[in-house]
Image (cartoon, rainbow, N blue to C red):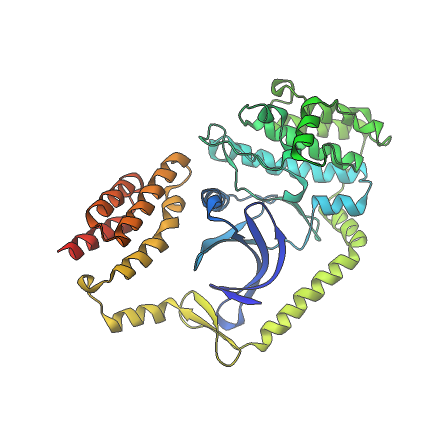
Length: 425
């Protein structure tokens, strides 16, 4: 349990390629508290993807997409705060359930398709998720199904073209092609095949072995492994998994219609979220009880601490009595007014601290309308300006800050340039 800005981290609950995920608590006035999930960036080399995830996911509003709540930096650590899902991911679900019934498959499939279609149509940006895999599908105890992890969700014609887990990477990408929304359709096909068969479609002892299987192996119809799978579902899955992109469904909406048509023709009675929730609670009753006990224990421990808050949002720190106090913006603002430092007396160290805190804003405030290349150029100029400033090479530092300002238009960079000019005088 440790303070982290305005939050308290209580348990590590997961880890992905870019970050570690913690269960955390947000506190405010009059005893308000809320449980959330916080992902903390592991390496600065992934910062641009982390910023991308923050700024794009913050605008998503869909029942089958995990909500982003906050983004920021505490010390040297960048973080993303998201809604906390009490439940399991799809990989964990399949490992426990073993054989997924057709009506339950159809329920989960519909929710996944709804989420992916929303991402594909979002604001007409032609986004591609690029990392649809079972660990990025979350299933809640209340029967919700949500897509998460948007670190490499970028427009189709993005200047960079990353991919996620190799076992869920379409063949055209492995042979040097570029991502399109048809690639996400292939990923969905892999998910559906694995849900229907309770097996991994592509696995191996090395990445190279997995790649070879994706490129060269013939995909079995799910019904050859699970006889309960109707031939009509075989056709839907295998069409999604066509190695030639143009032979797949043209878009996610076509898969949705095919599945609905299959359900109608077979007379399969649809299940609803309450039905699915009842199934989840029956299968995972021990896991649910364990999680609730952990959360209740955390609440009790936090209740023992002296948590106080005055004013607006601020950071949390442990005080000498073992409690937790929150350092508010009002206190910091009051201290600044009391000290009344002039711009001329601003130290080099002060400008460095200000510049460092501003760095991540270059990516965050430019929005996805700017290319990743623009963001990178702005950040590189900004970083070079900081390095030259530390060396007291004010002239060249100013030139680099001006380059960054020209790309971003961020007013605070202009303020730094003004302060440099005053120091030079």
